[in-house]
Image 1: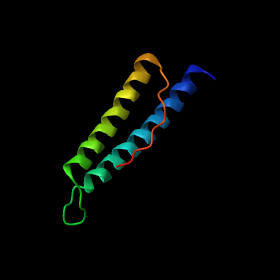
Image 2: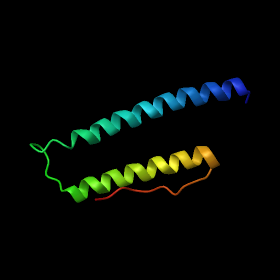
Image 3: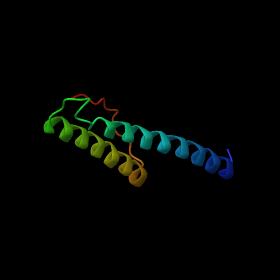
Length: 75
C-alpha cells in the first residue's frame, strides 16, 4: 500500500472513530440526569476511571505502539 493511501485510510478511520467516541461520551454524559437515572458517586468515579484508563492506554499505543488488553466496563 502506498503512503498516500495509508494516510487516506488513517484519516477516514480516525475521523469516523473519533466522531463516534465523542458522540458516545456525550451519551454517557446524558446519564447524569437524576430525574431519569439513579446512581452513586462511586458509580461516577468508576466511569471516570474506566474512561481515563482507556484514554491513557490509547495515548500509550500512539507513543510506544503498545498493544493493551481489551477491557469490558462493568459497574
